[in-house]
Length: 337
Ligand code: C5P
Image (cartoon, rainbow, N blue to C red):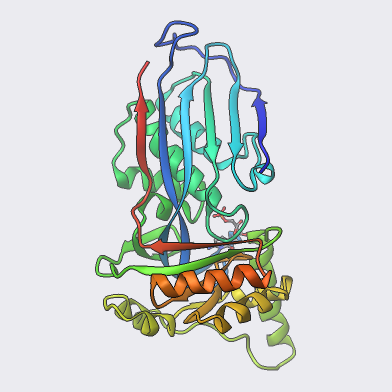
């Protein structure tokens, strides 16, 4: 468990401090969930480099926690990250939580230094939107810290400017995502509880690299005149199945177009997928761009059994049981000066 910490050079604060020097300062802690894609249909690359998606997002109960507080006047901004994989998370201005804070601070015309503390609960570079969840939690926390009072849809609009998955991490639940994933329609009827074993892998995968590999595989198949890369089918049957409470029916309709690309880059994940299915999961699938693997189970007891088998098989770095759907980003705690 690494701890990364860095001070970032930034402008001096112009607004006088609310609290006396050395005294307590206002801070807000918020959480946001991991996402998985129950259905991820990837279209062709657009002119802007993004791919047109049709996806069904679901929020799982793995949480990122972000605390945003005012730092002493004259200090630089500070980003600290703790928890599993923290040493792989940037702490400069490219950090997604820092970008979220910047966006709202600039919009509000506030020029005070902040400290941002991130506690990782979602696998880093694992295809579960851990960085996006940081940004979602940071947006919600900063909105409260600065007293902006933005509506949920105003927060989601700003989230969409920062990244494709961030609006969903704000919203949570289960939602149909279109565009590059940022246009959301909540699937209100999709409420049945789902148990998922989350198996993280050693090392991460870069999302752009996985999309590029999918483009390459598709171009190669088209060029050779051979069989086209298989694509996931229509989303409607899954949306219908999610209205019911039959895990096996839902499991049979799950699909991820990025899986072939993730497996091409990390062939050893096939072994992980096989091990989970042999252990009794209804379906094993790469999560988003990977390399985290997901195993959908019929019950909580089944999920515990699959997780135990997988842990023993040594095919994953870490194995956890998660459940969904859960709500989106929310403030946990708000401390006044
Ligand atoms: O939007 P976000 O910054 O999360 O996307 C990360 C990268 O994933 C993009 O730069 C792009 O390479 C790829 N991506 C894509 N099509 C999408 C979403 C992401 O190609 N719909």
